[in-house]
Image (cartoon, rainbow, N blue to C red; front, side):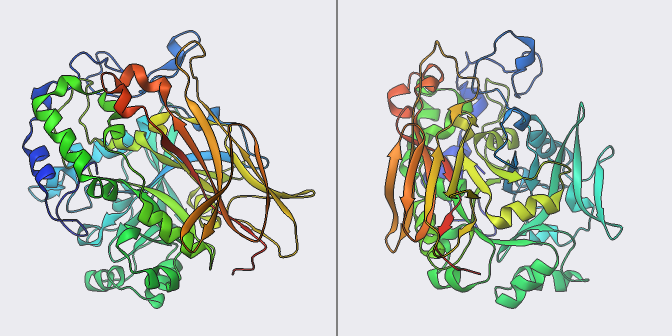
Length: 484
């Protein structure tokens, strides 16, 4: 979701939120002169780069992952972790059910959002108080034309049919006491058993969810006690969540709300509107540093889309908080073997930590690579370099997909960081290929950027929005550790 809402696992309303909810955004005409990415379509979506010669990047273009080079023995796939639908009580403008029936417009919107942003996968996380009431394959957002993924003759995931030969792998999950993703079936035969299973925090509960095919993450990591984060046998944590971003940066949210009300003409394009309020989730990153000093764990970027705040249509043809727009802003990239792709292949890569997160609102990254080398051996993100081996960490700084060489150029650089008791310590930085002879420890990489190439769409807020930004978070490489 774009701004905090009420309900399970949500924070109380604030002045900024109340103000935003009272603003009829469409009537303000935010950016009434901004272009429609699909003129005549009636709603926003990706630019069609195939219709023009030598296309160059703009904020509406969507990159298929087929345009990404392989990384050694892997191909790269992009997707969403943490998303809601009409099977969450607080999604769909607070009306996931209408007269007892599923909100079909919202159902279509979430499916369309993942298709037009060219996701390869989506791991849903619907709240248990609706999710637990409905069975597979309904909670897989199944519709005619889709292809169910079966295991033991039962539906465990869904290939959403996007048309033109494209599909998105969708798996179910729930944001309840914890956040199991990729559930292959409900835990519990009755509603009461399901609700108990999804609302229990214990090692036993985690193992039960894992036995149902799930990877168990902790959502909104900043809200968890450090002891629980360290001791629960979870598979991963969120290292960024847009909900906490907004709650922890209320001054920017309030400023945006006032500008929407009194000076909408001073704002840049809504398609890059995240830049107005973005900040890193430092509390989550600190939790992560402490955790990877003791065990292997995957970090994920959480979209947390609900489409439940700003229903008016803006001048670019889309609502501010649409599933499409939020899915376009950032995503997770996984390294998977070439060949057939299904939910098991994706979960194996995520569990292994072969994944990085990118804020695609700054542009799609092409050429990112973080690895460790020891002679002829190569270790990927999530891997452990064995004790006694001397490792060199290698970071390749990516480029922006289809960047116009004649236009403004971003300043891009990389950093290698080591986990410490106080958080993360930079050990190497540079603008090209970076190498670092690593001592024992846990290391991750970042790519940072000053996105000057976005200035034409940020004006008249260019000086405010075009500042240093995080672009990519890698997962961790463990050097000379022996974690289970």
